[in-house]
Image 1 (cartoon, rainbow, N blue to C red):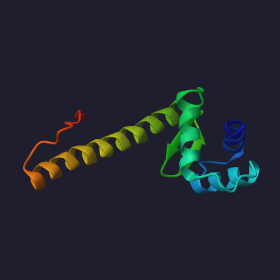
Image 2 (cartoon, one colour):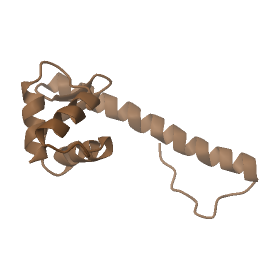
Image 3 (cartoon, one colour):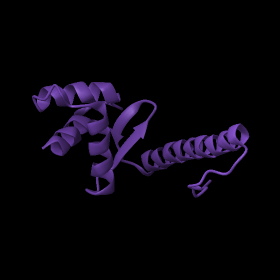
Length: 112
C-alpha cells in the first residue's frame, strides 16, 4: 500500500524528505504518475490521525518522529500553522465587515 511505501521511504531517509521528493518517489514506487500532491498530503494526514504513525512535517519536509524533541518540534510547527490559519480566518471576517459594512449571514465560529 502507499502508506507502507511512505513509511518505508521515510524510515530509509537520512533526515527530512521534501514533499515533492516524496511525491515523485511515490509516483515511481506506486507506478502512478497521476498521484497528486493533495492526495499525498491527505494520505500522510490519515497515517497520523487514523493509523497511529509518528510522522513530523516541517519546513524541511516529512520525517519519522523518533525522540521527544522531534515530537516537541512537530507540535510547535503545527501550533504555528494553526495560529497563522486562525489569523487569516479572522482577518477575512474583518475584511468582509469593512467592505460590506455588515455581518455575514453564516457567522463563522471564531477561534484562536
